Amino acid sequence: MKIPFATFEFMHKEIRSELDHAYKNVMDKGWFIQGSECEQFENEYSAYIGTDYCIGVATGLDAIYLILKAMEIGSGDEVIVPSNTFIATALAVSYTGAKPVFVEPQLNNYNIDVKRIEEKLNTRTKAIIAVHLQGRAADMDCINEIAEKYKLKVIEDAAQAHGTRYKGRMAGTLSDAAAFSFYPGKNLGAFGDGGCIMTNNHDLAKKIRALGNYGSDYKYHHIYKGTNSRLDELQAAFLRVKLPYLERWNQERRKIANRYLEEIKNPSIVLPEISTDEYEHIYHVFAIRCAKRDELERFLNDNGIGTVKHYPIPMHMQEAYRELGIKQGELPIAEEISRTILSIPMYYGMTDKEVDFVIKTIQQWN
Image (tube, rainbow, N blue to C red):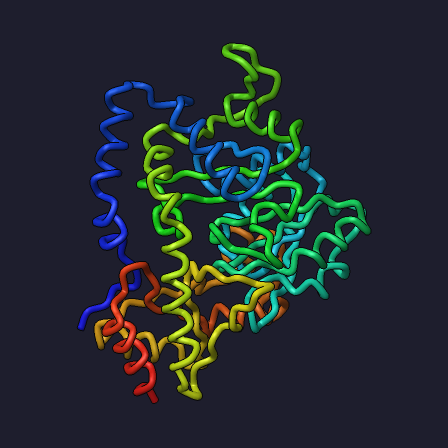
């Protein structure tokens, strides 16, 4: 049996006629940037997440960068970033001229360990970026308490958290501003790159929108040295088709995850922390850990099961961040996760037989 790590085949097949209609509608209108599709998607996603404002941008990385720029974070400043996340989170900080300061995660859920944040704060610290990694929310109440105590901004990196809930509240509503990615592999994915920013702050939203439109508040009038980062009409139209299905798709992912959690009992495998009512996981990926991760991966691949390592080299060990001077062993939890983590198949449309096969194969590995 061949089981890919992920596929969009079943998802797109179900809604193909709606996607075709969305494409035709955009083509017939002949308006491809800053039109009605993007405006309507922004309104619909705001209503779904529960924020006053949504600003469509080109990528999830741009979303974090534009938030930081709008908050006037730059050279000489520091921003708290989890040591275990995709490098885009740190890159956005670097693009502003600020310095990312890495804080270790909790080993049981991979998100930032709030007990370690305060030891990394100083007078240069201006913000905390809370990443909801793999679709599980960070401990936002504690993060916001620390931010209030030290007068810091809080930004959610919700790139993997479309529909994630924390104590009944949607990810994207738990901070000063939140960044989403619509990269095709996300739970709500476009047919190319895309992203958005969510906030309840009117002035911040207005500034972000201008910064992403060449610094312009209206045509040929530029109030900031901005950039070009806008969600195009075609991607917005496709996202509008997908959005009403997101809750059902997420629920299907939870069903698969629950089977993995209940039925994988191999003592060599460490499973992720079980989702609770307070932390309603959407399982963007389902990541297990194993001391002999590479051998396990080869075994699964040899048996036709696709896998991905998220992420095999921690950020502080990447050549791009050599200038930070962080030596191997200084962030041991991030290194341990990078050395042992393995994501197994998780996608809408997996059959019971396919889930059975993944579980059975993992159980057989010794």
